[in-house]
Image 1 (tube, rainbow, N blue to C red):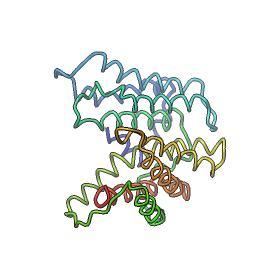
Image 2 (cartoon, one colour):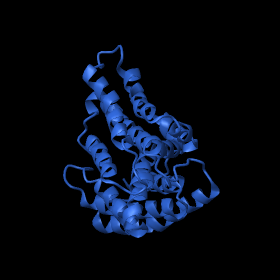
Image 3 (cartoon, rainbow, N blue to C red):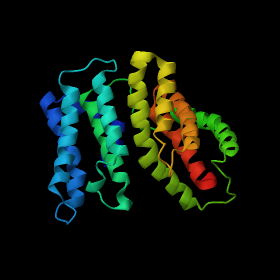
Image 4 (spheres, rainbow, N blue to C red):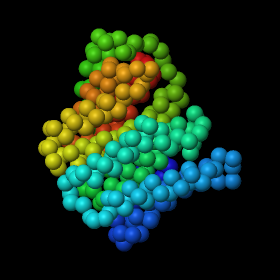
Length: 273
């Protein structure tokens, strides 16, 4: 599941864009391979789950492919993004990976689906989806992190959302936190909200409005972190989304946004959760 997210960051999408349209559509079915690796030959395998895993990517790919779309945001883009968001929040795919420890699998599957549909089928431009750790991206990401952290500390303390825990975490916990956050949280979320959503919104409403709308939607995506609507989390996540969006927009580099996002989440999880 991590393979498409990783290798597309180093140019894998380019040769796939050149294959014929019907091949691109049917190729989306290969995104179901992780489900078969996980379930085939075990009691967890279900034909319904297998059909969904194969058909869902193919149908969305066909919806974006035929006919070819312009550069600007269209209603079909909105529909696909809304369907993916609904599949995530309503947990449509959770029965395919029925164990709590595998809760991240549907998220990664949907991230692969979005990546393939918009990069290979939609052939979206200006995404900045490169995982090359350039000096410029690192500096930009670190700068936006430094801008946001004081704001988060002030708002977090005033609202009672965060509480400082004085501790010196083990080096292995820091390394594990960075790797897990980078690969499983920051990478798929920045792909969706910055490389695709903010990118497409810019073609209709301009850069500033796109930044703010994408940040607000990013914040609202955190509404269910708790038993009730967590307005504190939504507020801080929306503000964070502005800085993640600024990091991506400056040089259109997703790696910069991932650096900011990873830094914020790791600091929060180690000292303020």
